[in-house]
Length: 246
Image (cartoon, rainbow, N blue to C red; front, side):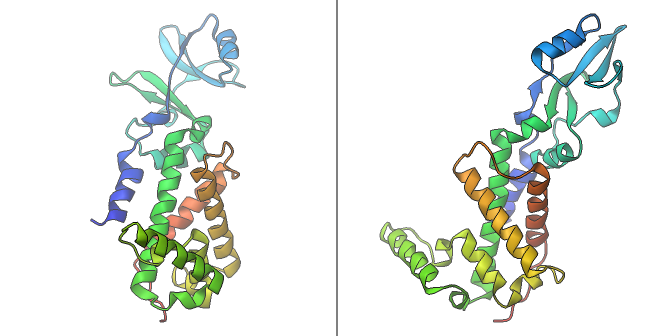
């Protein structure tokens, strides 16, 4: 298992949904509407005749819970993200099997998931740099003199600090898009990819990366758009290394 595999294991399996959940407030049948309005809750669990039932704003009355309303506490965080893109909220049971936690689409903006997004983008960046090292020895021909000079300047600075790196490590994310745009190398990832879609996705991922790195309050993309970025990243890093023309 290499470093990229270990990082993927961390972000896709070892961090579960629980860090973004909230403790569930359980309501009584006598005043659940008032209590939910006070807390500005859109969903809740209500005790009706001794049984726990669900109530979502807009429902006429509490209705029975189904297994589709629950998410397992061990659901990997990024899988939970996909589930919440498709459905607004889930309840989570405690060890005794009782509803005890809730996770909603609002929780997607919490720090653990931001770390997960940044982690996946970093894995993607590492993967593309590894492909350049392995298969594109003439990668410098794909970049402008200005971009090469900036990468070389950073390389010399880091080397002066005794860091064990190479020039590829000093490339910016936008440089990677340029390298794989050259000669339509992106077609090796997916023959159906157009240059427009590849550039659009790389630019979007780069913007999201910068926003996450600078802890901006608004990510600038919808959850559906971020989901498409993660799918795009996985479509490239999950496949076997393509053969590029040298």
